[in-house]
Length: 416
Ligand SMILES: [Zn+2]
Ligand SMILES: [Zn+2]
Image (cartoon, rainbow, N blue to C red; front, side, top):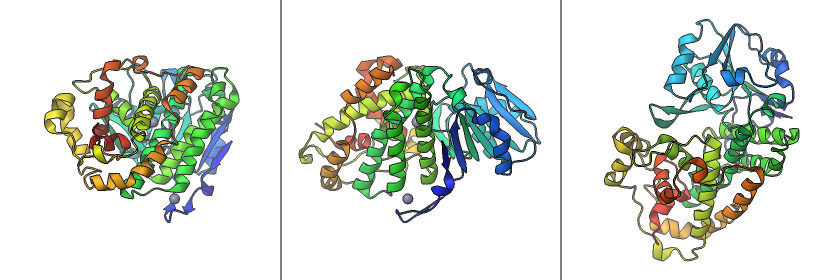
Protein backbone atom coordinates (compact mmCIF):
# COMPACT_ATOMS: atom_id res chain seq x y z
CA UNK A 1 0.00 0.00 0.00
CA UNK A 2 1.02 3.56 -0.66
CA UNK A 3 0.24 6.71 1.34
CA UNK A 4 0.40 9.71 -0.96
CA UNK A 5 0.87 12.99 0.87
CA UNK A 6 -0.61 15.04 -1.98
CA UNK A 7 -4.02 13.75 -0.89
CA UNK A 8 -3.51 14.92 2.68
CA UNK A 9 -1.96 18.34 2.06
CA UNK A 10 -3.83 21.60 1.75
CA UNK A 11 -6.78 23.44 3.29
CA UNK A 12 -8.63 21.47 5.95
CA UNK A 13 -12.11 21.50 7.49
CA UNK A 14 -10.48 22.68 10.75
CA UNK A 15 -9.78 26.05 9.13
CA UNK A 16 -6.03 25.58 8.87
CA UNK A 17 -3.98 24.37 5.97
CA UNK A 18 -1.75 21.38 6.62
CA UNK A 19 1.55 20.71 4.97
CA UNK A 20 3.52 17.50 5.06
CA UNK A 21 7.21 17.20 4.27
CA UNK A 22 7.12 13.46 3.54
CA UNK A 23 5.99 12.97 -0.05
CA UNK A 24 5.15 9.31 -0.05
CA UNK A 25 5.20 6.20 2.11
CA UNK A 26 5.44 2.80 0.46
CA UNK A 27 4.50 -0.17 2.63
CA UNK A 28 5.07 -3.25 0.52
CA UNK A 29 7.15 -6.43 0.37
CA UNK A 30 10.35 -5.84 -1.61
CA UNK A 31 9.97 -2.06 -1.95
CA UNK A 32 13.56 -1.32 -0.84
CA UNK A 33 14.74 -2.80 -4.10
CA UNK A 34 13.11 0.19 -5.81
CA UNK A 35 15.11 2.75 -3.84
CA UNK A 36 16.70 4.30 -6.94
CA UNK A 37 13.32 4.65 -8.63
CA UNK A 38 12.16 6.80 -5.71
CA UNK A 39 15.35 8.85 -5.34
CA UNK A 40 15.01 9.72 -9.03
CA UNK A 41 11.29 10.48 -8.63
CA UNK A 42 12.01 12.93 -5.82
CA UNK A 43 15.13 14.44 -7.33
CA UNK A 44 17.70 13.19 -4.83
CA UNK A 45 21.12 13.13 -6.42
CA UNK A 46 24.76 13.16 -5.40
CA UNK A 47 26.60 11.26 -2.69
CA UNK A 48 24.68 9.31 -0.10
CA UNK A 49 25.38 7.60 3.20
CA UNK A 50 23.38 4.79 4.80
CA UNK A 51 23.20 4.57 8.58
CA UNK A 52 22.58 1.19 10.21
CA UNK A 53 23.35 -0.57 13.43
CA UNK A 54 24.97 -4.01 13.36
CA UNK A 55 21.58 -5.70 13.91
CA UNK A 56 19.81 -3.91 11.11
CA UNK A 57 22.84 -4.32 8.83
CA UNK A 58 22.53 -8.09 9.22
CA UNK A 59 18.71 -8.16 9.26
CA UNK A 60 17.11 -11.17 7.61
CA UNK A 61 16.05 -10.32 4.03
CA UNK A 62 17.90 -7.02 4.45
CA UNK A 63 19.55 -5.41 1.46
CA UNK A 64 22.42 -2.95 1.35
CA UNK A 65 21.77 -0.36 -1.32
CA UNK A 66 24.94 0.87 -3.00
CA UNK A 67 26.05 4.06 -1.23
CA UNK A 68 29.13 6.26 -0.96
CA UNK A 69 29.45 5.65 2.76
CA UNK A 70 28.08 3.07 5.18
CA UNK A 71 27.98 3.91 8.86
CA UNK A 72 27.27 0.92 11.07
CA UNK A 73 26.75 1.72 14.74
CA UNK A 74 27.35 -0.65 17.64
CA UNK A 75 23.85 -1.61 18.87
CA UNK A 76 25.00 -2.16 22.43
CA UNK A 77 23.60 0.61 24.61
CA UNK A 78 22.64 2.51 21.48
CA UNK A 79 20.12 5.26 22.22
CA UNK A 80 19.08 8.39 20.41
CA UNK A 81 21.32 10.68 22.44
CA UNK A 82 24.37 12.93 22.22
CA UNK A 83 26.65 9.86 22.08
CA UNK A 84 25.00 8.26 19.02
CA UNK A 85 24.84 11.65 17.28
CA UNK A 86 28.53 12.18 18.06
CA UNK A 87 29.45 8.80 16.54
CA UNK A 88 27.65 9.59 13.27
CA UNK A 89 28.95 13.16 13.02
CA UNK A 90 32.52 11.99 13.59
CA UNK A 91 32.36 9.48 10.74
CA UNK A 92 30.13 11.19 8.23
CA UNK A 93 32.05 12.43 5.18
CA UNK A 94 31.86 16.16 4.44
CA UNK A 95 30.48 15.81 0.91
CA UNK A 96 27.43 13.61 1.58
CA UNK A 97 24.27 15.00 -0.04
CA UNK A 98 21.62 12.87 1.64
CA UNK A 99 21.24 10.18 4.29
CA UNK A 100 19.38 6.88 4.39
CA UNK A 101 18.26 5.60 7.80
CA UNK A 102 18.07 1.79 7.70
CA UNK A 103 16.91 0.65 11.10
CA UNK A 104 14.42 1.21 13.87
CA UNK A 105 13.52 4.29 15.88
CA UNK A 106 16.93 5.01 17.39
CA UNK A 107 18.69 4.97 14.01
CA UNK A 108 15.94 7.19 12.60
CA UNK A 109 16.13 9.81 15.33
CA UNK A 110 19.91 9.87 15.18
CA UNK A 111 19.89 10.21 11.38
CA UNK A 112 17.13 12.82 11.45
CA UNK A 113 19.11 14.90 13.93
CA UNK A 114 22.31 14.72 11.86
CA UNK A 115 20.46 15.47 8.61
CA UNK A 116 19.01 18.58 10.20
CA UNK A 117 22.42 19.66 11.51
CA UNK A 118 23.90 19.26 8.04
CA UNK A 119 20.89 20.75 6.30
CA UNK A 120 20.52 17.71 4.02
CA UNK A 121 17.50 15.43 3.34
CA UNK A 122 17.06 11.85 4.49
CA UNK A 123 15.16 8.74 3.48
CA UNK A 124 13.48 6.38 5.91
CA UNK A 125 13.79 2.60 5.59
CA UNK A 126 12.34 1.08 8.77
CA UNK A 127 13.50 -2.48 9.43
CA UNK A 128 10.97 -3.18 12.20
CA UNK A 129 7.44 -2.01 12.99
CA UNK A 130 8.51 -0.81 16.41
CA UNK A 131 7.50 2.87 16.77
CA UNK A 132 5.44 5.55 15.06
CA UNK A 133 8.27 8.06 14.92
CA UNK A 134 9.77 7.22 11.51
CA UNK A 135 8.08 10.17 9.79
CA UNK A 136 8.49 12.59 12.64
CA UNK A 137 9.78 16.10 11.99
CA UNK A 138 11.36 16.19 15.44
CA UNK A 139 13.76 13.89 17.25
CA UNK A 140 12.77 12.08 20.40
CA UNK A 141 16.13 12.27 22.15
CA UNK A 142 17.46 11.55 25.59
CA UNK A 143 19.84 14.48 25.75
CA UNK A 144 22.21 14.33 28.72
CA UNK A 145 19.69 12.18 30.57
CA UNK A 146 16.55 14.23 29.95
CA UNK A 147 13.85 13.17 27.49
CA UNK A 148 13.70 15.97 24.99
CA UNK A 149 12.09 16.77 21.69
CA UNK A 150 14.77 18.28 19.46
CA UNK A 151 14.81 19.73 15.93
CA UNK A 152 15.06 17.26 13.07
CA UNK A 153 13.78 16.75 9.55
CA UNK A 154 11.09 14.44 8.19
CA UNK A 155 12.10 11.85 5.61
CA UNK A 156 11.47 12.77 1.97
CA UNK A 157 9.91 9.34 1.52
CA UNK A 158 9.55 6.08 3.41
CA UNK A 159 10.23 2.61 2.05
CA UNK A 160 8.82 0.14 4.56
CA UNK A 161 9.84 -3.23 3.17
CA UNK A 162 7.52 -5.82 4.70
CA UNK A 163 9.88 -8.65 3.67
CA UNK A 164 12.40 -7.23 6.16
CA UNK A 165 9.93 -5.93 8.75
CA UNK A 166 8.12 -9.22 9.21
CA UNK A 167 11.41 -11.01 9.96
CA UNK A 168 12.40 -8.65 12.79
CA UNK A 169 12.12 -10.03 16.33
CA UNK A 170 8.46 -10.22 17.35
CA UNK A 171 8.88 -8.07 20.47
CA UNK A 172 9.71 -5.12 18.20
CA UNK A 173 6.33 -5.44 16.46
CA UNK A 174 4.58 -5.85 19.83
CA UNK A 175 6.27 -2.64 20.92
CA UNK A 176 4.93 -0.94 17.79
CA UNK A 177 1.46 -2.22 18.63
CA UNK A 178 1.84 -0.82 22.17
CA UNK A 179 2.81 2.56 20.76
CA UNK A 180 -0.39 2.48 18.69
CA UNK A 181 -2.65 1.34 21.57
CA UNK A 182 -1.37 4.43 23.40
CA UNK A 183 -3.37 6.55 20.93
CA UNK A 184 -6.55 5.60 22.80
CA UNK A 185 -5.48 7.64 25.80
CA UNK A 186 -3.48 10.18 23.77
CA UNK A 187 -6.53 11.08 21.69
CA UNK A 188 -8.69 11.23 24.82
CA UNK A 189 -6.18 13.62 26.41
CA UNK A 190 -6.27 15.84 23.33
CA UNK A 191 -10.08 15.91 23.40
CA UNK A 192 -10.04 16.65 27.14
CA UNK A 193 -7.70 19.59 26.54
CA UNK A 194 -9.97 20.81 23.76
CA UNK A 195 -13.05 20.53 26.00
CA UNK A 196 -11.35 22.17 28.96
CA UNK A 197 -9.39 25.04 27.44
CA UNK A 198 -10.40 25.14 23.79
CA UNK A 199 -6.97 23.88 22.76
CA UNK A 200 -6.82 23.55 18.97
CA UNK A 201 -8.01 20.16 17.70
CA UNK A 202 -8.18 19.11 14.06
CA UNK A 203 -10.92 16.51 13.42
CA UNK A 204 -9.17 15.28 10.26
CA UNK A 205 -5.90 14.59 12.05
CA UNK A 206 -7.83 12.97 14.86
CA UNK A 207 -9.63 10.76 12.34
CA UNK A 208 -6.32 9.72 10.77
CA UNK A 209 -4.93 8.72 14.13
CA UNK A 210 -8.09 6.75 14.95
CA UNK A 211 -7.77 4.98 11.62
CA UNK A 212 -4.23 4.03 12.60
CA UNK A 213 -5.46 2.51 15.87
CA UNK A 214 -8.25 0.63 14.14
CA UNK A 215 -5.93 -0.75 11.43
CA UNK A 216 -3.70 -2.21 14.13
CA UNK A 217 -6.35 -3.39 16.59
CA UNK A 218 -8.23 -5.26 13.89
CA UNK A 219 -5.28 -7.36 12.76
CA UNK A 220 -2.68 -7.52 15.54
CA UNK A 221 -3.60 -11.09 16.48
CA UNK A 222 -1.96 -12.13 13.19
CA UNK A 223 1.47 -10.88 14.31
CA UNK A 224 2.43 -13.99 16.26
CA UNK A 225 1.57 -16.17 13.25
CA UNK A 226 3.77 -13.88 11.09
CA UNK A 227 0.88 -13.03 8.80
CA UNK A 228 2.11 -10.60 6.18
CA UNK A 229 -1.18 -8.70 6.32
CA UNK A 230 -0.78 -8.08 10.07
CA UNK A 231 2.68 -6.58 9.59
CA UNK A 232 1.50 -4.49 6.69
CA UNK A 233 -1.42 -3.11 8.72
CA UNK A 234 0.77 -2.46 11.76
CA UNK A 235 3.37 -0.63 9.68
CA UNK A 236 0.60 1.30 7.93
CA UNK A 237 -0.85 2.32 11.33
CA UNK A 238 2.54 3.45 12.62
CA UNK A 239 3.32 5.49 9.52
CA UNK A 240 -0.17 6.98 9.38
CA UNK A 241 0.12 8.05 13.01
CA UNK A 242 3.52 9.55 12.24
CA UNK A 243 2.12 11.46 9.27
CA UNK A 244 -0.74 12.73 11.45
CA UNK A 245 1.89 14.22 13.76
CA UNK A 246 3.59 15.76 10.74
CA UNK A 247 0.36 17.43 9.63
CA UNK A 248 -0.18 18.65 13.17
CA UNK A 249 3.37 19.92 13.53
CA UNK A 250 3.80 18.21 16.89
CA UNK A 251 3.12 14.93 18.69
CA UNK A 252 -0.21 16.02 20.24
CA UNK A 253 -2.40 13.44 18.40
CA UNK A 254 -0.12 10.54 19.29
CA UNK A 255 1.31 11.22 22.71
CA UNK A 256 -0.49 11.80 25.99
CA UNK A 257 -0.30 10.60 29.58
CA UNK A 258 0.76 7.07 28.57
CA UNK A 259 3.85 8.52 26.90
CA UNK A 260 4.62 10.65 29.95
CA UNK A 261 4.55 7.44 32.02
CA UNK A 262 7.04 5.90 29.61
CA UNK A 263 9.19 9.06 29.59
CA UNK A 264 9.35 9.23 33.36
CA UNK A 265 10.61 5.64 33.56
CA UNK A 266 13.17 6.34 30.82
CA UNK A 267 14.43 9.45 32.60
CA UNK A 268 15.16 7.43 35.76
CA UNK A 269 14.54 10.09 38.43
CA UNK A 270 16.63 9.81 41.62
CA UNK A 271 13.72 8.45 43.68
CA UNK A 272 12.40 6.31 40.83
CA UNK A 273 15.55 4.60 39.60
CA UNK A 274 14.19 1.57 37.78
CA UNK A 275 16.19 0.58 34.77
CA UNK A 276 13.65 -0.98 32.48
CA UNK A 277 14.99 -2.76 29.42
CA UNK A 278 11.50 -2.62 27.89
CA UNK A 279 11.13 -0.87 24.55
CA UNK A 280 9.40 2.49 24.11
CA UNK A 281 6.14 0.97 22.85
CA UNK A 282 6.13 -1.71 25.54
CA UNK A 283 6.26 0.95 28.25
CA UNK A 284 3.65 3.01 26.42
CA UNK A 285 1.45 -0.08 26.12
CA UNK A 286 1.62 -0.76 29.87
CA UNK A 287 1.09 2.95 30.56
CA UNK A 288 -2.06 2.82 28.44
CA UNK A 289 -3.59 0.07 30.60
CA UNK A 290 -2.69 1.95 33.80
CA UNK A 291 -4.09 5.22 32.44
CA UNK A 292 -7.26 3.58 31.15
CA UNK A 293 -7.95 2.12 34.60
CA UNK A 294 -7.46 5.44 36.40
CA UNK A 295 -9.36 7.44 33.74
CA UNK A 296 -12.39 5.15 33.92
CA UNK A 297 -12.27 5.36 37.72
CA UNK A 298 -12.25 9.15 37.55
CA UNK A 299 -15.04 9.21 34.97
CA UNK A 300 -17.11 7.12 37.37
CA UNK A 301 -17.52 10.28 39.47
CA UNK A 302 -20.77 11.84 38.35
CA UNK A 303 -20.59 14.99 40.45
CA UNK A 304 -17.00 16.22 40.56
CA UNK A 305 -17.72 19.41 42.56
CA UNK A 306 -16.89 18.09 46.05
CA UNK A 307 -13.46 16.86 44.89
CA UNK A 308 -12.11 19.79 42.85
CA UNK A 309 -9.55 22.26 44.16
CA UNK A 310 -7.50 24.98 42.45
CA UNK A 311 -4.71 23.84 40.15
CA UNK A 312 -1.18 23.77 41.50
CA UNK A 313 1.99 22.35 39.99
CA UNK A 314 3.78 20.07 42.50
CA UNK A 315 6.07 22.12 44.77
CA UNK A 316 9.87 22.12 44.50
CA UNK A 317 9.92 20.53 47.96
CA UNK A 318 8.12 17.57 46.43
CA UNK A 319 9.80 17.51 43.01
CA UNK A 320 13.45 18.09 43.89
CA UNK A 321 13.94 14.98 46.04
CA UNK A 322 11.99 12.93 43.49
CA UNK A 323 13.92 13.99 40.40
CA UNK A 324 17.26 14.66 42.07
CA UNK A 325 19.65 17.55 41.41
CA UNK A 326 20.48 16.63 37.78
CA UNK A 327 16.95 16.39 36.38
CA UNK A 328 15.10 18.82 38.63
CA UNK A 329 16.13 22.07 36.84
CA UNK A 330 14.97 20.68 33.46
CA UNK A 331 11.57 19.82 34.93
CA UNK A 332 11.03 23.43 35.94
CA UNK A 333 12.17 24.63 32.53
CA UNK A 334 9.91 22.18 30.68
CA UNK A 335 6.84 23.23 32.65
CA UNK A 336 7.20 27.00 32.23
CA UNK A 337 4.76 28.50 31.39
CA UNK A 338 2.53 25.79 32.85
CA UNK A 339 -0.01 24.52 30.29
CA UNK A 340 -2.69 24.48 33.00
CA UNK A 341 -2.00 27.75 34.76
CA UNK A 342 -5.29 29.30 33.59
CA UNK A 343 -7.51 26.30 34.33
CA UNK A 344 -9.93 27.03 37.17
CA UNK A 345 -12.12 24.66 39.20
CA UNK A 346 -15.19 26.16 37.50
CA UNK A 347 -13.78 25.31 34.07
CA UNK A 348 -13.21 21.72 35.15
CA UNK A 349 -16.69 21.42 36.65
CA UNK A 350 -18.25 22.80 33.44
CA UNK A 351 -16.29 20.42 31.20
CA UNK A 352 -16.74 17.37 33.42
CA UNK A 353 -19.77 15.80 31.65
CA UNK A 354 -17.89 16.07 28.32
CA UNK A 355 -14.73 14.62 29.89
CA UNK A 356 -16.70 11.62 31.17
CA UNK A 357 -18.08 11.09 27.68
CA UNK A 358 -14.58 11.26 26.16
CA UNK A 359 -13.25 8.68 28.62
CA UNK A 360 -16.09 6.30 27.79
CA UNK A 361 -14.57 5.86 24.30
CA UNK A 362 -11.32 4.42 25.73
CA UNK A 363 -11.33 0.61 25.96
CA UNK A 364 -11.34 -0.47 29.61
CA UNK A 365 -8.17 -1.75 31.27
CA UNK A 366 -9.69 -5.25 31.21
CA UNK A 367 -10.39 -5.06 27.47
CA UNK A 368 -6.85 -3.87 26.77
CA UNK A 369 -5.42 -6.52 29.07
CA UNK A 370 -7.34 -9.20 27.15
CA UNK A 371 -6.04 -7.92 23.83
CA UNK A 372 -2.42 -7.79 25.08
CA UNK A 373 -2.71 -11.36 26.40
CA UNK A 374 -3.87 -12.55 23.00
CA UNK A 375 -0.78 -11.18 21.26
CA UNK A 376 1.66 -11.78 24.12
CA UNK A 377 2.45 -8.09 24.77
CA UNK A 378 3.78 -6.77 28.09
CA UNK A 379 0.86 -5.86 30.35
CA UNK A 380 2.01 -5.00 33.87
CA UNK A 381 4.55 -2.84 35.69
CA UNK A 382 6.40 -6.03 36.71
CA UNK A 383 6.69 -6.92 33.02
CA UNK A 384 8.67 -3.71 32.48
CA UNK A 385 10.69 -4.00 35.73
CA UNK A 386 8.92 -1.32 37.73
CA UNK A 387 7.74 -2.33 41.23
CA UNK A 388 3.93 -2.41 41.34
CA UNK A 389 3.89 -0.59 44.71
CA UNK A 390 5.30 2.53 43.01
CA UNK A 391 2.22 2.89 40.79
CA UNK A 392 0.88 5.96 42.56
CA UNK A 393 4.24 7.77 42.26
CA UNK A 394 4.30 6.98 38.57
CA UNK A 395 0.77 8.32 38.02
CA UNK A 396 1.36 11.37 40.19
CA UNK A 397 4.75 12.49 38.90
CA UNK A 398 4.57 11.46 35.23
CA UNK A 399 2.59 14.53 34.06
CA UNK A 400 5.53 16.70 35.17
CA UNK A 401 7.76 14.95 32.59
CA UNK A 402 6.04 16.93 29.84
CA UNK A 403 4.25 20.27 29.76
CA UNK A 404 1.10 19.02 28.04
CA UNK A 405 -2.51 19.06 29.23
CA UNK A 406 -3.73 15.53 29.97
CA UNK A 407 -6.44 14.15 32.21
CA UNK A 408 -3.61 12.73 34.33
CA UNK A 409 -2.41 16.29 34.91
CA UNK A 410 -5.99 17.44 35.54
CA UNK A 411 -6.04 14.77 38.24
CA UNK A 412 -3.76 17.11 40.27
CA UNK A 413 -6.92 19.20 40.78
CA UNK A 414 -8.98 16.28 42.05
CA UNK A 415 -8.66 14.70 45.48
CA UNK A 416 -10.73 11.95 46.91
ZN1 LIG B 1 -7.11 20.22 10.01
ZN1 LIG C 1 5.43 6.66 20.99
